[in-house]
Image 1 (cartoon, rainbow, N blue to C red):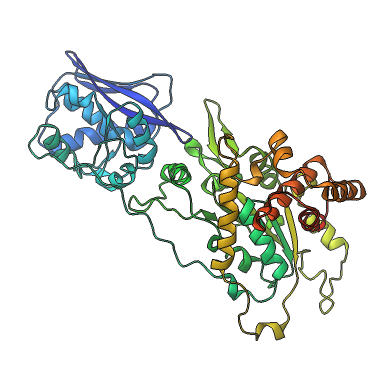
Image 2: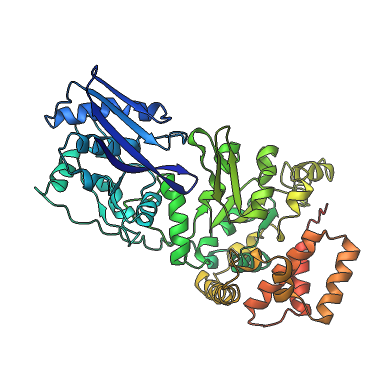
Amino acid sequence: MVALAYTVAFEGIEARLVEVQCAVTPGIPAFAIVGLPDKAVSEARERVRAALSAMAIALPSKRITVNLSPADLPKEGSHFDLPIALALLAALEIIPQDVASQTVALGELSLDGTLVPVAGALPAAMAAAEGDRTLLCPQACGAEAAWVGSVNVIAPRSLAEMVRHFTGQAVLQSSQPGEVLARNGARDLSEVKGQERAKRALEIAAAGRHHLLLVGSPGSGKSMLAARIPGILPQLSPSEALETSMIHSLSGLLDEGGINRERPFREPHHTASMAAIVGGGRSAKPGEISLAHNGVLFMDEFPEFPRTVLETLRQPIETGEVVVARANAHVRYPCRFMLVAAANPCKCGYLADPARACTRAPICGEDYLGRISGPLMDRFDLRVEVPAVAFTDLDLPETGESSADVASRVHKARDIQTARFAGHGAARVNADAEGHLLDEIATPDAEGRALLLKIAERFGLSARGYHRVLRVARTIADLEGEADVQRPHVAEAVSYRLAMTKEV
């Protein structure tokens, strides 16, 4: 008789159900795992054998065959240890076979039978819920998986505890969701002195999830401003939190099962590789752009990133998803993020500073910012020059608005957009609007339209640039509580667009 259990194989954030079949038959003693396993899965037989030996369970002198179905789906990772052990114990009639066949399991086994936590418990719980099955996982993963409320999560500490539970000797209680991580102490905008135009741009970008480029001399406050964006962003909605946490679960970034309601803020170093930024490497893991899904990707020293890395951002920015192509699979990850980039105006950084004039001006600036291609520059909705702050301003007391004040306006603008885009598919904020939907919500009044057409003709805005101005104008109107886009909203949106214009 063939005993069954279930586990999952990950394709992006999708967890595909895998049937684990185990047969113990007469023949030359052997333990074989088939079904396109990788090295880690193939080595599971030794971990399972040692864990069972630690429980004083000896394998019979028969042929043990474990098949992972579907056989043409690649199986990767150490989380196959526990489902293989579960199916084998059912085949040996140590635990009931009907119970094993209704269980989705994942977990790594240590040699003494202890269950080691693995990544991906949250997507696995979603797959178990869809199949109306119980999820079995290590204790450290139970609180994370329990956030899927429609699934029963059993999280033992060891293989022995699992056996006692399924045989009724010591029944385990279902795991409970981990506590939602509390808001951390975000840095406050009131600490930034001066830079009122840049602060306004931050508010608009946060309200509509628009991409923002900050250009200024070293020490002018670009990184300081970017670091305060998390303090003005609204918290993730429940659906967004679950969606974002599934990506972080695959990367093993959820701490103690807590789902963070704060929007991600990722800041990779400019030496990061393409696989680290976009995704890929072994097992095609999500990159920084996917880890920043529903949040912020801050790229400091933007022109210093490799040109190939910068150019790969163009398609994900437009589509909101990235496809990591491999020879045997195409893995798709969502990546709707707000890109905030910071750059010096030239290599030395002092192109516009009269006190420290750049000796290669203006060629130095053209060469340096020229590393940002026209099509990529075209995708920034707001471009802001951040001037150096005078020393006299640094001694002034804090008089600017706090992050809480700005966050209140951003939250109201996001509420307006949530109501506006209800029932419009994937669109959630103004940055997502396109086609007929954009025409419907962001067509300006007669004076605003005349101004925009004049600007587009005078400065040669691309079609993409034209539409991005409309989206920003719609967000400015939402911040002011206006139902219609008017000339002042268009004028302000255009003022951010024309800075450092490099249309293609």
